[in-house]
Image: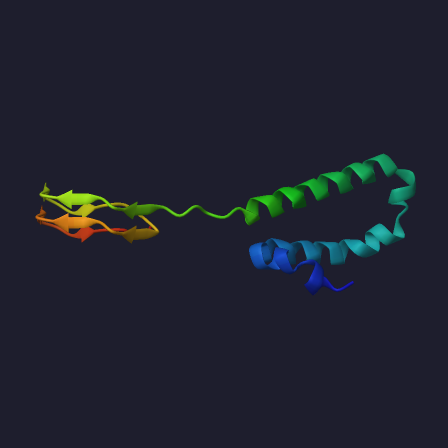
Length: 114
């Protein structure tokens, strides 16, 4: 079994959890192979496998979602008087804005990532 090909996406998105799971499975393998867990408790074993597969599926779906980008574009920011700092939020893309005539006594921050 080639772990690098099977777990490449898991290692890329959630490496600590994947490595922890591999270590746990490595240590649990002698216990599982020496016992008759599958023969004596097939319903419990099947239920556990189904739950584990569902958790891995949920993890794969959750980590594969792409974050949406926020934009601040084509706005007119004019003639503002601010006593402190002026912060226009955390935007991924800032373009095409008209900024003029602002009186700001502190810092002016446009599109700073948090």
